[in-house]
Structure formats: structure tokens, C-alpha cells
Image (tube, rainbow, N blue to C red):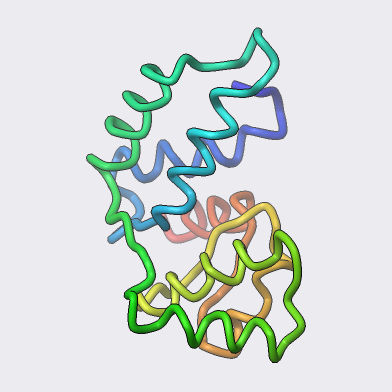
Length: 140
């Protein structure tokens, strides 16, 4: 728990755990990013590599499909990024969005909404965890 800012993400993970979310998925890159961040946080929040691995295994691998970009689509991703002048770390968001498209995702849930707006042209909704959880509650 990282305070109030993590409440919606925790609600989303709970919804996945109780199977309120159908066919949840994530990008392999997101698993690696979680591991990287979780093992370098300030000491009071930091996980050991073993605990981070266990958490990814228990909370992600057992509950979600973990997707990656097919190798045949990798050059197209880079060419498209070059054409759209994607630079620096934004390539990682473009990569995640392309994985979502290739996997047939209907929605990308992210706190970085503006970095994923290009996914809209592929018919993929882009919502914050707060928005997504609110829609789940409204459907009940």
C-alpha cells in the first residue's frame, strides 16, 4: 500500500482476483517494470527480488494472460514510432499499446492515460484505474 494514490490500482487487482474482470491481461514488459520498481523503492516499501518474483507469480501469472509483441511485428512498431516521432521512454508505452492491440484488448488501464491515446484509433479504450473500477461498479 503506497497510500491513497494506490487505492484504485488495488481495487482493480482485487476485481481481477475475484474474477469481476473477464480475460485480464498485461504486457510482459509491465511485469519487468513492476519487478524493477518494486526492488528499488525506498527501503520502507522495497521488496526483495524473491518477494517481487513471488508477487508477480501469485498476482499476475496465476490471474492474467501475459502477452508480448510477436517478433514479426517488432520492426513495424519501430518504423511507426519513428514516423510518429516517438522518442525516449515513450517507446515503452508505444510497445505496451501495440501489445494490447496485437492481443485484441478492448481497454488499456493506465495512470498514464495521455501516453496511450494513440490506441484509440485502434478501437481500444484508454481508462485510468479509477475510471475502470467505477465502470465495473456501475455494471453491478
